[in-house]
Length: 335
Ligand SMILES: Nc1ncnc2c1ncn2[C@@H]1O[C@H](COP(=O)(O)OP(=O)(O)OP(=O)(O)O)[C@@H](O)[C@H]1O
Image (cartoon, rainbow, N blue to C red; front, side, top):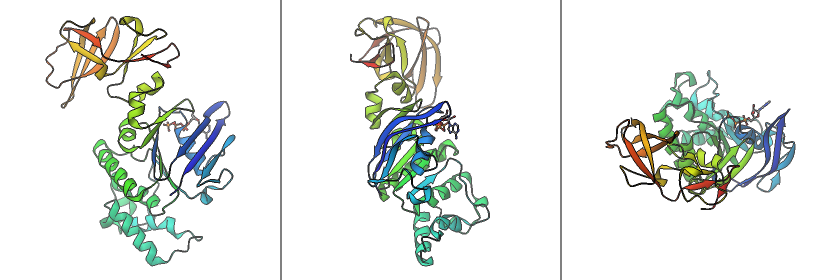
């Protein structure tokens, strides 16, 4: 494993600036997730590190060595794609061993077998080694795809939404397993997702991207509690942060145009708050409920206790508790 450094890298496709002046260092053994909406340059960043794209400017270093002009095969990276591109006519064993059979490697067969079996155990697919790839379920196929990368012990694993084609239950299981494996192996991972739960639960640091730029990088907690702007604030948190005109409540600092209010920033009472709102919907989700409110024409969504007794049409009263503030450009304003 190794440190990977992306230095001031930019990449445009014609008029589209896919990645703009991006700098990011992924420490040895670190799990960094790039989070952002579609089309913000996450995949392009991975492809630049892998050598599948060439930067217009800037450089990429792996273990201190400038690899910017190296071919993908010479960079010692392993890529796991969203779609598990397995060889259907080969067995699971052969699919995983494939990466180790490159002519330049010349690994003895016994070593290949040991490595494949070890990784298969890690991924709980050891009983499937002799099955054809086509005989597997989606979850098993994705494990094989991840296994193919893991057998190689590269400097860095580049993973592009590897769990997005799995159903919710499998995704939850694989999230835990991937994190366990990463910790056990001390693997360095750069991981692309637009699933905030994946980023929050697996990453040591999250990089939030927007329109080709890295807006902020920090621990999940830093990004959640201390977002630099409204874009970043809206990336984490379920339900999404409520962005409300600052003049709806008294006491906003000067320069603030928008209040960012998450559930924990909103106290809801029957009366006695600062501003009244009307309940427009109560969504019962089992372990929790989403309370939808109309606050002088502004929609507000917040979490409520599952046993909430409020009904559509009820009047409630809101009070803010240390919310976030943003200026006209969406930049954070100190409270
Ligand atoms: N080969 C290409 N040719 C032209 N435009 C491209 C190419 N690859 C990416 N782009 C454009 O660059 C921008 C960034 O794309 P990229 O795939 O990196 O985004 P992303 O954040 O990974 O999105 P998603 O979450 O949908 O995968 C997009 O506007 C995309 O259309």
